[in-house]
Figure (cartoon, rainbow, N blue to C red):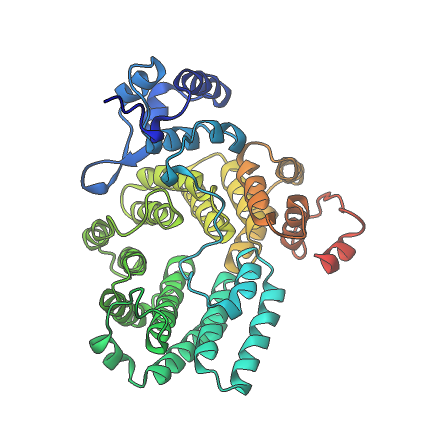
Length: 458
């Protein structure tokens, strides 16, 4: 019986090969480099480059490209969304719309609006909405909503790099969640049952999920201080917090949160006062299979791998992993995640490159994506050390989306979806925030009126 082609092969192979060749010439990448930078899952579900022979087979129509191979190739070659859509086929695993998703994606319906504001970077509006919901929950004695709002508030302050304010909110969420369940945290970890479809609507299950988020947030606060601020005092608290978080997530049978716990534990090991590379790599191996293929969690795991090698004696390998992570993160509406990835690349070029434009470009792109906290401070420091004319050229390229700044514009398009603002609105908002104080005098054209009026409007 004739079965026909699998639906995942339903794409124009000749047109795809032609598009690969044209785009390869446009971006100046060889077939060898294309194979090297196009990562797919290999043995033991680990990411590995596509074989050069496989690339040749696809180009000469000797074999079809699997959905994952097509996606990896198009990501490496920076296919436009419209062009990429022609070759996706009909396999559901290859259709990735811009996702509003973070490590902590368990907001209950009352907080969805606040979370939407938060992930798009409208922190003042998100803060007001969360304060209002938290106040309503206190008045109504709704402990679950209190715990959930407190966790999102911790997330908000973590996003903007205010760790001092983030930690008490995370702790408040943990205490309130435990109060709902009626046990201390240690008791909850010992008695927690897997969350499944049948139990997920119970108060205990909901509070357990919120507790998982809050504990993971608290751990990330401690590890972020170690990684980005080079503070080692939180190491003991980070170890204790991560062990608790990991134990709870395993009891609740939550694969992706477990993977996040393991990833942050690996980062802690490599940024500790006495770094442990073997331990960090072992933890990353444990992450295999915890994340959906092609999703944001997997992109963050690639970034985590980059951090591990950047901090070890293989910084060039770490740089390559971060470059691959940058391409993957550009596909999702996670501006802070992409900004931090660029921040880390800027750090690499500051230490290992004589080209002073490279760190400036990466820090400016990071600042335009997420002009807050330590990331913004570093961007402004780099700008002050640059020559005025050189900085102006980079700002002009940033505004036009040339070269290294294309991902910034791509991210603004993703964030503007289902929003009353245009991508240009969001871009100019962030650039004006970045250049507001202690920034060299550069020409930034006002959009739709004065910069002050624009800030009030957006």
